[in-house]
Image 1: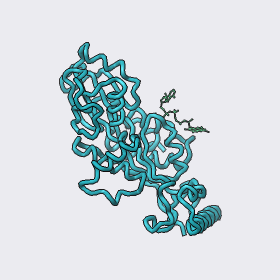
Image 2: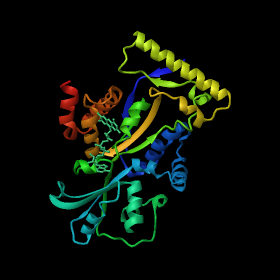
Image 3: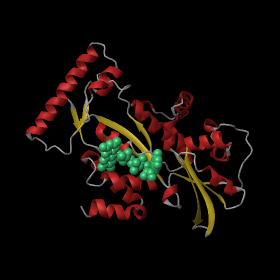
Image 4: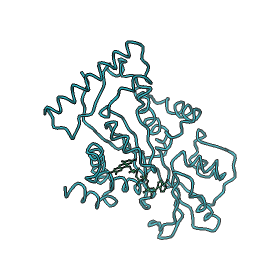
Length: 311
Ligand SMILES: Cc1cc2nc3c(=O)[nH]c(=O)nc-3n(C[C@H](O)[C@H](O)[C@H](O)COP(=O)(O)OP(=O)(O)OC[C@H]3O[C@@H](n4cnc5c(N)ncnc54)[C@H](O)[C@@H]3O)c2cc1C
């Protein structure tokens, strides 16, 4: 019998620079369902392996925010806005009531700006040799400082949120269409659900748009159980993950890590909390919006009002 679970969502907090590597490891291990292997010593070897294999999207889940004085020399950074995952703007710093250049980006973007424009200042300031591209590079800018990780006192461009969701494959397919976000998803190729680690069963998400215990629900359940039986049979016949996944339905459970800045999150909510979106995507997105509103009421008050309070 398939295991039936509800969709869930949670925020993965990254509160300080010292947690950068453990945050990345936690996000990355979701793809392999190997979270159980995490110890105090595993983050650095895990990230080294990721970087060596070129699977750099995993390091996109950690963002760092910097500021620098608005000087002529520093304004050269404004010509580098094309690096994907970097956000750059001139904003008033409420702490000093002065305009500053605010630069933020995920760890992949910070490595890309080093490769593309030979700007190593940001990696050097973070100070973890694991991420360096050219350790002995001269600084390109003056008086750059690290402000924070993930959230900052600056605009929505420079505030990032990482979430972990358990949703159905249909929802994750829709959500991963959003191009200005970063994703790590449980792999249906590497996770072989016939193995004991997965309880030798398929896990599916309870369909939110089919009434529980109705004749249609019974039919859905019958089909899920048939798929599971065939999956296990093909696994017994020596079927590999790549072959077995051909059977998996839209209802199959997927673990999804997703990171973006608040500008993109707001865009996503405007499309995916709307009644035109598929109910399973809408359910997950509304759960997220509720959590985001509690964390950042100023950024999400209007959307909370539209999509949750008034519905
Ligand atoms: C109700 C609904 C029904 C849908 N139906 C279908 C469907 O039938 N078939 C289908 O294929 N898709 C469908 N989609 C997906 C949809 O077409 C988009 O791919 C998805 O919603 C991503 O949103 P986006 O393009 O607005 O922006 P995102 O990818 O979230 O990007 C954010 C913003 O960045 C900018 N941007 C990013 N990349 C580019 C680029 N390459 N060029 C220019 N600007 C860019 C745009 O301003 C965009 O608004 C549907 C979506 C919804 C909400």
